[in-house]
Length: 262
Ligand SMILES: Cc1cc2nc3c(=O)[nH]c(=O)nc-3n(C[C@H](O)[C@H](O)[C@H](O)COP(=O)(O)OP(=O)(O)OC[C@H]3O[C@@H](n4cnc5c(N)ncnc54)[C@H](O)[C@@H]3O)c2cc1C
Image 1 (tube, rainbow, N blue to C red):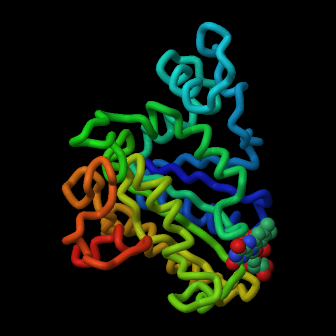
Image 2: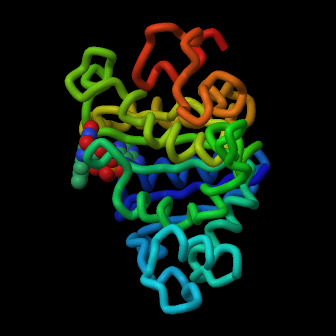
């Protein structure tokens, strides 16, 4: 199978750098083909701006992030770095986003990868929008049939990210990435691989972490995805896009969008 690792850490000698090397070796040893988008090494341009569109919309209209994105995507006017990453996504059967948690989210360089590579017509604005369907998204879309997993390291302890931990539950912190960035264009989203309390790493813990990562990668194509509820399968009212009253009655918040019975 084909695996794309989108990797965001500025230092090859870091913990993330070591884990990325380990992941590549493990996946290749299992017979997979691996590509790595090493965003810092590529000097990936993070800001989405008018330079992303080689030829703008006719008529001299002001730059519009969505409309110019659609125009460039549909007419072959995207900058080459964006088109190359989209081709890697088309090629991949599984995508791993690997990063240290920075300010409760992904590093800006990776957010910029998402903003620019996820073009209008590629990752959003796909499919029929009507009273019956609200586009191909949340479980459907251009990336349907592919798997995605986060590999995340945190300075905070596991307890800090537990259900009553001060930082908030890790499932909630990662929900916008899992649901909004990965499930939205159609990925099956696997539970994340997490390394907490990174300052406490020593040789023994690194070995245990490496073993655990290896085991997760061995199951990359068999692990059950998170049971997010597909948008167009009847669980949501359209166009309000609220959960039907009889689905998890009374439950609100992020967890309501996961089918606990699945
Ligand atoms: C801007 C910023 C924002 C942050 N925000 C948050 C946040 O919101 N929440 C949070 O929890 N944390 C946060 N952090 C902390 C951050 O998540 C951690 O520093 C990061 O996850 C550690 O990963 P690293 O690859 O940089 O580790 P490194 O610092 O490279 O390594 C961590 C430890 O692992 C050891 N190590 C590295 N490689 C090996 C190896 N091969 N074998 C054995 N040991 C090894 C190192 O010696 C070190 O002790 C933030 C940090 C920054 C800079």
